Image (cartoon, rainbow, N blue to C red):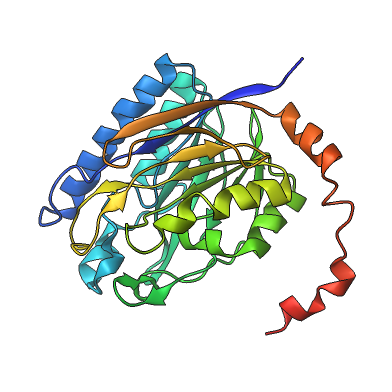
Length: 289
């Protein structure tokens, strides 16, 4: 009998202008996202993930200490606790990407993973932090992750997370596969004219190389402080053969769903024996600092 999991992704534009108070922005973003969680529950979604730092804008387009006030603790902050309530209500696994405060002045780009009974399972902290012009001043806001590449055994599947810029690095994607990830979610904020040509290339390649499903999430529309390009949506799922199963429009808020047959992982890996035929003893060069 096939292990079929119905999974979902939520992509949205920013709900209100960034000139509004941070608490108001967070509330508006959360309210908009919760409507899609409700819809997902009605459609039978069992695992869902939101976009990168879903409670606010992609503020890294500027270097402004104002945005430090948008951090929350995990798991004791309000957003994680709220999503634990929704997980319990709908028997749904929820991946929650937010701006995390470990302690005062120590902040991470993080995703919390909550099991279907509301249990907080742990978190992934974005490992690769870009700091390039124009508009990606992430090292002003985030420390590099220090938790490695964990996977989380949820009620429905073993889940891994890889956040936005991480997707350009195949090493971590392989670590997630070797650790047993069946579905890898990549919450992102990526804009037209820069990486769009890679959007449907890199992550299907990770899916093929490692024999797992990928859920790629992007936000949509124009927003401040990023006023020099458009977030192009197109959130999608792809399977272990790299085939896109479902995809959202580039300019609309959306819930994207797909039925993922996890037995396909075994089928594909038994055909392409990439894990068997690896030669890690020959790869020392890529680990040089």
